[in-house]
Image (cartoon, rainbow, N blue to C red):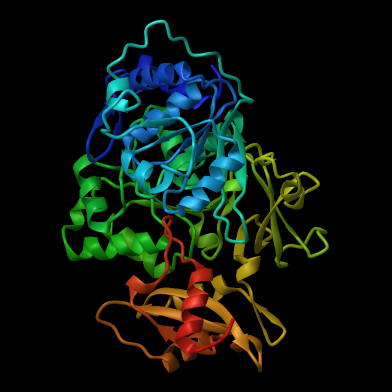
Length: 511
């Protein structure tokens, strides 16, 4: 037995053949059906010439068929390249070319909108499209004579493209063993078990949904409930209908779920035992609401990045009172240190760049040696995030380097300001950005979404900030916008680049 996801599925098909593995809006697959479908699709792909080391692009919305395709690709010792369907056709073509893909798995709608006339690869369709290259026809064909080649721990499993917020996106290369270490860390350090059912509300092309929740559950022989598209009410209904036990919810999503549950049928969350949260600030009042809705549930507040393969630290429920503003301690086999600007080791409590190392960290970006060299230092991955670590090993996230505001010659960490403002009773969401200022160089601007039915003005927000922060960190301006106008990406994070552009236009400030 190797660390291949394909072999985990095959093992569980023998061990739990009738146990449900996957649920979505249209279908339910047991482990036996998942394994059989993956075999049939793998046999078809093998017939097209796909084999060990070949790159296969996967462009589709989340579904049980997406998972079938993923397992089938790995069954051939090929490499899966999940693509973000929200990118432009040109961006998707660039990803496909950069990864040197030889086949694309997609759906009829994306074939028409993103692929046809742009990407000249053989196509397999995994929706209900008719034809010889459609999954419906493929699954009607027996896989007699097909034998999966023996997998290796060193096989490349994934090339996952980063968001590309600082230029052309880069493909993170992860091998079977690296993905498996993340699977083990999640299962062991957050108490997952074979009777769990996780809900996947963020897209499967994203490292959080795929690496941190789907794959650990497939390894354990547990269940995953897949949402094609996120919606708070739909998510609550699915949690209730399928007795979901856990799920990932970025802070903005967690707040939206709480609002929806408080409005109607909070008992829909009765089966929920563990919240996984990351990608933004989760305030004490948020935690109180989550616990009030689901008494006895546990919150695991996590930090990671795709290059680390994924999760690095976790703040467990039992540790919350010890370090409530932290992102927790490193996972079981991970190390974290803080480095000064010259990359020397920082002292306890001193701010610097977060560096990490562990068995799930990537070896590099695909065909990008210069970019790879730039993010490693003496075997440590440079995250590009600012933080500190206390004497008890708790790590504190301050900011992305690119989001730090330099105001009056002093560094202001946007997440520190956001954490303080989240404590205000009338604040639902807040994003803190820096905008050009003749006096300050950059000035701190808070963009606030008010809680429904509550009022607060700029002067009150600024005064509240000064009560909770050093005065130079308080926002100089506050802009109020509706929740619908807050630029939030598919993983629930505020897109600071878009927010800066939007607010600059509102205020008439040139960037």
